[in-house]
Amino acid sequence: MMRRWEGGDPGVANQKSPTCLLLTPDLRFHSFGFAARDSYHDLDPEEARHWLYFDKFKMKIHSTSDLTMETELESVSGRRVQAIEVFAHALRFFREHALKEVKDQSSSVLEGNEVRWVITVPAVWRQPAKQFMREAAYLAGLVPPDSPEQLLIALEPEAASIYCRKLRLHQVTDLSQRPVTNGFDIDGSRPFDSSFRQAREQLRRARHSRTFLVESGTGELWSEMQTGDRYIVADCGGGTVDLTVHQIEQPQGTLKELYKASGGPYGAVGVDLAFETMLCQIFGTDFIDSFKAKRPAAWVDLTIAFEARKRTAAPGRANTLNISLPFSFIDFYKQHRGQSVETALRKSNMNFIKWSSQGMLRLSTEATNELFQPTINNIIKHIENVMQKEEVKGVRFLFLVGGFAESPMLQRAIQNTLGRNCRIIIPHDVGLTILKGAVLFGLDPTVVRVRRCPLTYGVGVLNRFVEGRHPHDKLLIKDGREWCTDILDRFVSVDQSVALGEVVRRSYTPARMGQRKIIINIYCSDTDDITYITDPGVRKCGAITLDLLESGEASASTGDNDKGSAFERREIRTTMQFGDTEIKVTAVDVATGRLVRASIDFLSN
Image 1 (cartoon, one colour):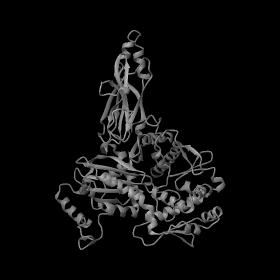
Image 2: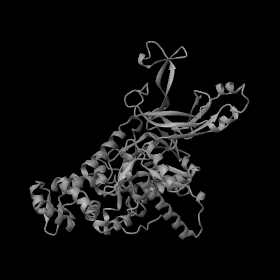
Image 3: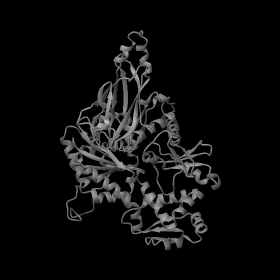
């Protein structure tokens, strides 16, 4: 594990580096993480306007609906750069950092092809975003594009799930143990067993069973789970909240996904945005915008101050949350508005925020709750919705992982609303759960054996026109035959179970002689009740390209007279895999048995 991030904040223990990147005015990489934030902060304000600072940029990939290689990101100073460049800079930094660390510790130099890289992404990211990360990794030089198998894309909650099943009881906090009086819950209902009793009972059970727990190498928590047990992993990160539902298959211990990964942009950043909105309500949006632009370093200071306080926010704290306003904020406001910050607070009618003479905003408990509540409610609502699904009923455990899961505010809220339905478990190293799980996934990517499709995928085809069944605006007459156009030929349906290695096969023939490429558009939809690719909710999301040139030369050179017949027979059999974390495609020329160069692209809309 790499713990050495330069910089870091006073008062905040960081196992992670923030998603910040600093580029020089001529777009060269300068620094990443705390180092980037602090360097940007120390620049002269006049100079800083020319530098490019990007913060929390990972979320942009999720929120951009038509992501391409050309998609741009805006730096704090307003200059725009291609997003793929920004991501490549970050990944290149990680690559050098990691290889250097390995070299320092083992003194052997790793060759490029001796490393398998695993990049984790939120499970709710769509195919274009996953492909985007892969392209950024190629650009950053992690792996060459011609050996794609050296790079795995892992799904964050899935990685967490792989790690959680190995946990031992002393490595988790069980939120189900609530305060108890006389063996009863405070409201009179029986609580779950105390962990001591559980542990004793397990030891007894284990001695009676043939294999003692330690020998089986899995955690004690696992021994409480029987075959067929279902559990949810809620990965609460900075940007997104991601849910995955798994069932354990014994004896091999593989996992089966029961419901398609779901979630949304309900991460901890939501609390930061709520704070910013609150500042805008008090001081005016125009002022906040201009303060960010003219005093960028002070704005970063303010966000750091808020971050440190945000992490200490806990329910039931009677005292207020104090956030220091930087001097330049107070000064700039006075110049800008001709009145003091204190006056602004008085006029804003926000009774639960007070001004302290030490230059601090004092947020009462109500104010703190108001900042956290919308995000927390979204998370709980989402977990509850998933728990009510037919295929998910009877979930026994809910694992809370990810950085935001460290927040006492979120823990208490989830405990209060969901603690009756299942056991809520938080691993001790909650912020690193995904990272450790990703390592396990990299060692054995086959551990998740069945996944659920997030969308319905298919292509548009022609079928014979049937009077009375097909609409007339879809009628196409070709060579004297009647065809119906735009029919969706489904590859997989939304929420369908797909096992690892399971494939969908289709054959395609070129439309004309000498054709160099077949390009097949892929369509997708969130629902399955669709017949035509023109139905509402269906969108074009990608394309399969079959490169006919290389395998075509053989048949073209077999003499002129049978060229036509070879062409007519020409059939390209395409095989698609949907059971992996990414969609993959391969193709074969049936006549020659040669592989056809096939690629699937979700980024060139």
